Image 1 (cartoon, each protein chain N blue to C red):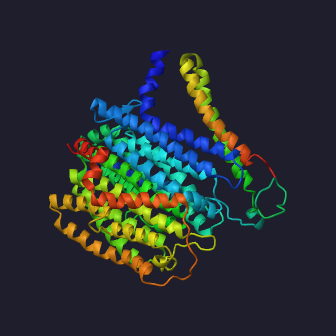
Image 2: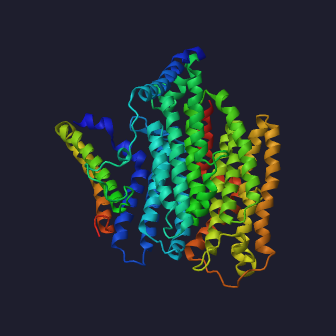
Image 3: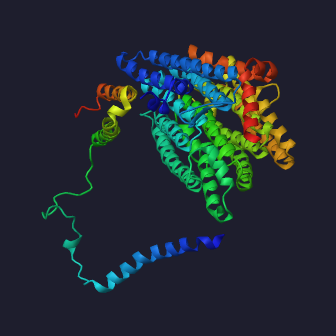
Length: 502
Length: 118
């Protein structure tokens, strides 16, 4: 009996997936607690969800300590379908941080929107479980289930403002396009399974490399469809059309959450597929990645220049940032992968910070997501205006701030691998991106305020603003100290690249 | 290597040809006698009283979704019940965990009023 049971699960397996288990438990707990709370006093939901994040972080810390203690590159569980390697742990921390900041931003905001239900936080935790499966899955079935768990939770969150037409429209568009792209992605995975006869990404990679030449057309089809699905999830041009609409209509806090955590999860999935399953198919995917990276940089930056809605502008700017990260993929060396991971880390802080400022504009009678709404912020709330300037300059990649280090590693990797044309193109687009970031700054500092009504951000929102601002400035000023203090940040990329690229 | 795909293209051609040929043959063979009554929707032989494009209450969809969820739950229960002895306590605990998660959902939809029909 014991041995039979041990084939399926044991204490070790449970320890590896404990972060996911914790989040699921607390998400269910939020659903139940929400029923017991009186209407109008729903803050305990947020507190429970935050507690769940703490517990998940504790479990994750235990997994990490086990790794460090035994000096291993990763622990796997459930017959190798889940693996907690440094990259997975890095991404899991990223998801937890992003979710924590989003919860801080959300509490007051959802009260103003009069949609402060417990399901909001439960869905957020469920989607983090999905993201963690995407980051730690080593089996295409688990990866796909994680992707769907994240996506379906996010569809609902995007449409959470039930009385808002834009929110409903965004959710429907996101659902239809998301389901379509998931279908294409699953088709690619099924072809890879058909070609290799296994669902383990490492084995797929090895068996694809050993295929006879007669299978190459099908292999090509498998790679193209898989990439199309992945590019859709990270919102790369030409698969980006859903992003601006979904970002604009979603509750602002969820827009930040999607653009940071959701994107990081999609990148975790993409890196896992590229580094394992498509490891030896570089000749097929490299031209496509280069083309998509150039298109993404161009499309994202040029479209962002003409936007008047802040959320839409940041949506296009996030598409442009994906372009930079794709360049790290083009370089495909240790610096490039490290660049992507560092980029995702600093992007989490600066982008969530920018969205936190936009959330602070929201009042009962004002949606506050147009550029006109932010005009004259300097005269009303100099602190928020100053922090927004920091976030925007960091997004633009101005040196003393964190955003610079994201771009620095990407450019370094491009130069190391001799992609000089791509590097100079990317530098050119930084200048373009500064135009639309400075447009917001100009509106905040130079133009008079439309109304004099004061803005009173809630405590959670202020905390989120200060945390993100501190991280943005801190990583920028003291990258070495910060990186050493958070040792996992750098060991993760180094270990992962060693495992990836050997 | 591309010549290996010739059977697939032949297969696609044949698959395309079958419906076209069938339709053409049917058109040539069948008696052509159109009549308005033939275009009416069939409702147990009685003349239809209303438009067929009626609107259903959205509650049907909720009930349908709930049915699917708890139906699938039962599908998972059957193999467990068949192998109950072999799976032993481990299987029992695992199934209770599974059921506990579903009970959370059940309590939730109940309290949210998704089971009320008014």
